[in-house]
Length: 236
Image 1 (spheres, one colour):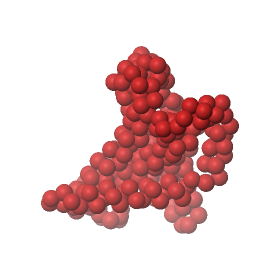
Image 2: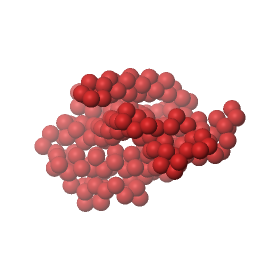
Image 3: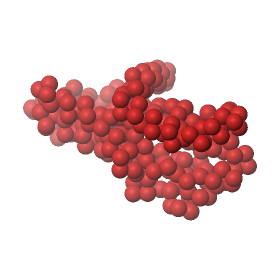
Image 4: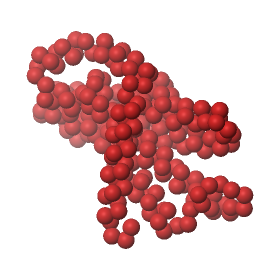
């Protein structure tokens, strides 16, 4: 992420080398977080809760969704969050399953976008000659193709990170709402009463890098799985 790009300056890279990566990170994070929250809002609406829709949250307008701190964390470190979509579970026919389906809609949208991005990347490098690096003598078209392939890679990787991070079964992340579907009422009450403590502990562990290895490992496994599925498509 941007933090890694900045630290690469100490290893001899120039600012010119890392600027495209910074720009692409900003573009991908803003769009992907907006898509994530829009998917929550749309799922809730389809399941019977119009709260988020009435607040204008079914929108890809970043101003409706982005949380400043969460967006900066996503850009710098590869994990982050947006403003939570308001959901009234009493409007669902089955509150527990409704909350779980609404929660999973966000990470699922990022996984789909990640898969589409790597599919387009594979098709691009398979059928179009893409330069391996920006070197003197490249035409304008070749430079555009190089940066397009790079942008698709960023969409693939960052959306994987966003999906995996949010599927961690820890409040207030989406994975916890899926887990709640299976927990007994006493456990739910305990978590609800201590959610502020759990939230603070989560943020502390994140900034200490406690989940970095797990998120990277799971993201890599999913990425390899996606690429394997793409190789099964005839003609690729």
